[in-house]
Image 1 (cartoon, rainbow, N blue to C red):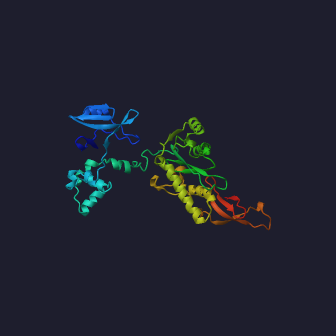
Image 2 (cartoon, one colour):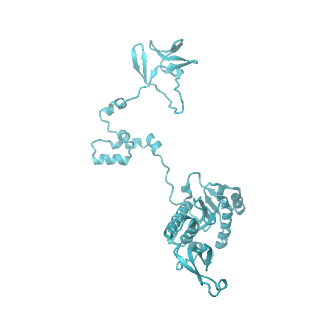
Image 3 (cartoon, rainbow, N blue to C red):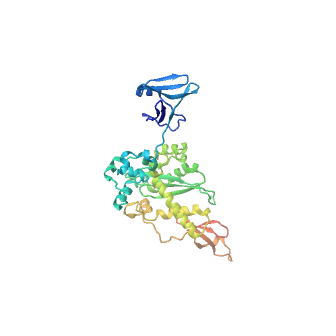
Length: 376
C-alpha cells in the first residue's frame, strides 16, 4: 500500500488480510490496527494514526459516520513481482512451473532433457505437488474402476437398468424411449420400447416375471440411477413386495451405472450402423434397437469368462446363428393358402426387420402396405 505521511509518500504492507470476492467494499479493522501499529484518533476532518510520534492521516470523513482509507493499493509490475532471488536467475522448478503456464512435471522434465537454455532444479518438484492454481483449473474426478470387483455369482443376483431417450424421431408406434434390463452374471439384456418414462415400473414387473420363469431364479437387486422412473412409488412398492433391493448411484455419476450405460451405447451404435447400411429412416430405430439386442445377446463377449455369449450363460445352451439375416434386406414372404385365391401371388415383397426374442420367428414389413408380418 502507498500512503501519504508528513515525511512524504511511504510504502507499507497490510498483513492478516482476508480476501472475500463477494464483498463489494474493503473493510479496515481499526481494532487490529491499534493492536499491531499504534493508536488511532477520530477528528472532525478525518481519522489519524500515530506511529512512534509520526502522525498521518489514515482516513477521510465520507459521511454517514464512515471514513475512507487514504491508501492506494500498489499493483506490482514485472520487476516488483520478481524477488531478488529471481533477479539473480532463480532455477526452482515451481517458478518455472508458473512461468510456463502451470506446465506439468513431465513437461518440465522434457525441457530439462532437451536443453532449452534454462537451468531448472528438478529436485524441488516434490515440494509443490499441490499447486492451488492447478487444483482449481485442472481438477478432474478420480477415474472409476473399469469393472466392479464384486460381480454377481448367480443369474439375477444383480440386474442393471437404464433408460435411453427421448429420441427426436418416434417409432411408428409413437415410442421415444427404451429401457434396458441387464443381468450382471450373464450380461443377458432385455429391452422394452416406451412412450413415456412412467412405464418403467410396469416393464420391470414384466421383466421380472419373464426372467424368473425362464431361469428359475429370483431377482435380488436392481441397480439404477436416481431417475424419477426408478424412485417412483410404483417401483418402490413392487420391489418391496418382491423383496428386491434397490441400489441407486449418486447424482451425476453415470460411471457407477457403467454396465447399463455401456449397454445403451453398444445398442445405439449397432442400431445406427444397421439403419445407415439399410438406408432406412430414423423412424425404424425401435426395430433396429430390438434387433441389436437380439444379436448382442448371442455374440461372445469378454465381459464373460471363456468368451461365452450372454445367451449361453442365461439358457445354458449355445445360440444358433446359421439363420441370421441382414437387417433391412428385401425378402419374399410366403402367403398361406388359406389367405389367397388361386390367382393371387404366393408371396409378398417385404423388408426384414429383425427377430422375436421369445419366438422362433422373423419380423417383416410388407413394402406395399407397411404391415408388419411374422414368419416362422
